[in-house]
Every structure is written in C-alpha cells, then in structure tokens.
Image (cartoon, rainbow, N blue to C red; front, side, top):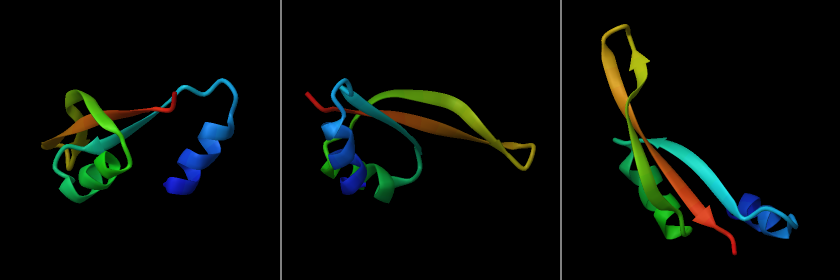
Length: 65
C-alpha cells in the first residue's frame, strides 16, 4: 500500500485516494488509519453473503495534498 500511495503522490492531479473495507475488518482498518486514511462514510448492508447475511462497508479517504 505504501508503494501505491507513493505512486499516487507522483501523479500531478491526484488529490485523494479512496478505499473500501468491511466494517468488521479491524486489522485492515487499523492499517489504513496508520497510513493516514480517515473514515468518512459507512454503507450499511453493502455486501450480501449467502443470500442472508449482510455486511457493512466503511469508506476511507487519504488526502494527498
């Protein structure tokens, strides 16, 4: 991820990066936060598994400038 962020910073007009992570994936959310991403939205019931179980998805952003 650090390489992807580094490459994005080199792109002239790229101002921010967005990512999506399941709300229950605490290790991934922690890693993203350590890299500077902040939570800006949660989409309730964004994913449906096994025709019964729904999972929320957190949307995170990293501002590059």
